[in-house]
Length: 477
Image 1 (cartoon, rainbow, N blue to C red):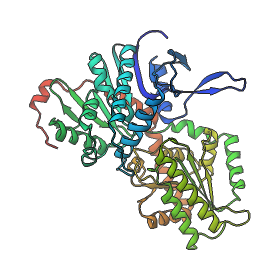
Image 2 (image 1 turned 90 degrees about the vertical axis):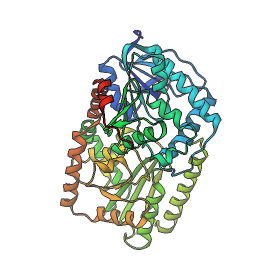
Image 3 (image 1 turned 45 degrees about the vertical axis):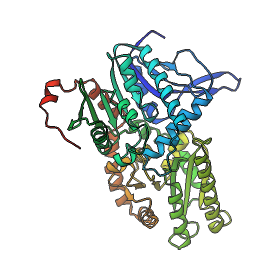
């Protein structure tokens, strides 16, 4: 480590995963997630540091360097993983922010642990930041950090980005600690959201809960201005577009189709196993298309990848059981020798294999009940330079705001999902190419580099002056 940094990322997890080599030695590799893909290059260019948990409970590690990044581990105990991460973050905030698809759990013990852990992250960031440094805090697990950090280090420039939806006032109002969370976010100079609706919800909440005036995208506190803005996150379009042109990916895509029995249509779903993703709804729709004869036997195969997620949480264990029963029932009714209509995989896949699956799929089915953005939809588009393939996309995914040429569906309406699946499968090559060309233009223009660049440019720019605040025409929200 070279000392304090002028640019810091603060996230629940570090940018690396620990792997065990064949000889038993441990090593680190860069995490494959979208957040790391987006921010790691920025961090390397700015010679910054990343503050986060390294993924193992009850273990303390010293700061270390990997892949040109300075990494500062924040320790968590097993109890804190249970109460802060699995508890308040994912049993309280996650369902609340996703339109209460599942009932949130409100427990004081979870809240107290969330507060303590956020304080630890803030202290780690305060110690690592150089004078006047820029600090970018990430996501719902750390919503108290901005205010805590500002109290410790008022000299810092602090940004916060929420990767999941921000709920309407009426839903957020249920939270017993609503004021604490809002005040935590207001510690930032810039609060970023996936969509304008999330930023608007937050501004109205600040007005109703704290009586704070706002004008445009600015919220006015006594001594400073907090800006709120939408920055829709994206993917590394260029890297994916290059990858799927590689001969080994093209060859693997052809192999996958043969392994599936060379059906006329391959449909694909790729999700974390989560109740917000609408996996059950899309499988129900596919099963009904088989049952009512819209699809003939052997005509289509649905490949559903459900990456393991939060398996110690009861809600997720029940979901896994429900999905596996549903898959078994549909296959039991419609399979034949050599043909299984649903290929279900509860496992993680390597990056290259996913790219080959995207290239194979004739129809990508992305039907979350609520999603901040959904990068799978954008990854699929990035992989289809052939202009082949149809995207069936939920209206309730943030990506739907940008990808209007997708086959948009209401995932709660099974008939609508069935209808749009069939439209995508029956579309002419010309129709598919027209839609795909427009969507690729959007994703290639607004890629992940542009997302990070626009957020940091906004964070670096000066806020409104006090005189502007006093003369502003306030909105009541």
